[in-house]
Image (tube, rainbow, N blue to C red; front, side, top):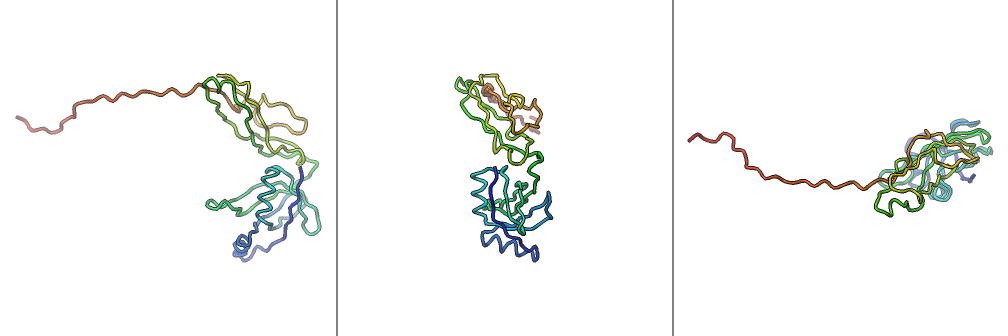
Length: 202
């Protein structure tokens, strides 16, 4: 999937320019990688937020830099801890005909049979590493847990094969399992006579 993002080249000095951009709702960023020099850019923060929300973090982001069409992937995103606003973004320019590796979210769907009978569905793996050409990178991988009974589990090896991408993560990694609920341990408070230290002799 490919989406367009309107960007502008920016100056990197003085550093106060970054804060000025953020105050204007812009996000300072940088793009580097295949067939492009490291280039500081900026773009509208709300537009980028909508782009991620609607297309996912693995979408190919196409931008125009000095009249050149550059295909990129979002490589790293820094957000403000308190406001959750974007502080800085790194884009990696990619060759659309070469495979690349990225982390892809795992989403569990359905209600496990074992959970209905009192078990607990535990997810142990939340992302997997996949390899594909940029336009075939999945936004997420859905895993149906409906048939998981108590004591059953799903590993990476159980993921269905897909012609568009290959899962690189170790096949033995466990994604999810239905386990028995933790037993509550009863603790009995045993009252004891307080020990008297240094009592006077009669």
